Amino acid sequence: MNLLLTIIRVLTAILMPISAIAFSYLTLRRAKNEHSDVKPEVQPCLQCGQTRVGALGEFTYTEKITNPRERIRKEQPYMPETSILGTESHFVCDACARRHLRGETLMHILLAIPYPVYLFVIQPIFVNDLLFTHVLLEILLLLLSVFGGASAWDLYRTAGAGETSLAETRDREAIRGRKKQLGTGLSYFTRSGTRYLKK
Image (cartoon, rainbow, N blue to C red; front, side, top):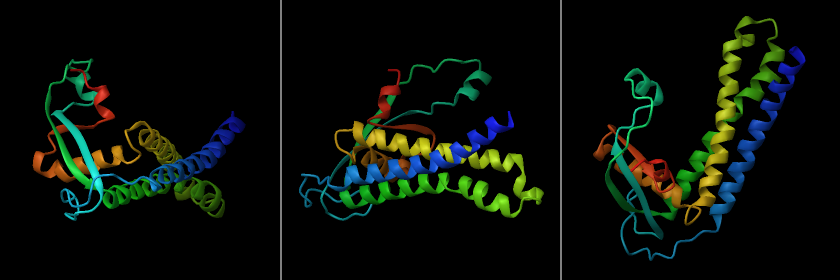
């Protein structure tokens, strides 16, 4: 049993960071050569206000969709049918879309890296220190590592599934740019996310 746990720990500590780095690299490479055909003088970017080359970011918003735990507490185990309150389109330039994409990929890598550092560097040094051999700390770092690898994969997948490799990123930037005005009491969906809506 101990051997199995050790194998799982080591594989997670190796595979998740490698996956996060690899999928982040592939995502950035996929988006590197994309250039929009919209002329820069058409309209200013929602985020930076500059008139540069870019394209439209689109999103849909609905009434707040509660998480499964809240629905069970309210005795609504199934997701209720959701009425779409509105759909918006906003111009997002290539520079802002790429900056957002780089930020997301960096975050995924930073989430995946601490677990192997803890397991292979910190824990052997402080092997007798209870603070650095705490089970809950290791579980937290392991979950963050798995989340980082899975999120990097999801971003790579959505970058390939959209009309262009920057479409999902533009949608997320459009949501970010409008969320303060529209409010946090709504649920927001990118173009790829609208398929989960029950109309």
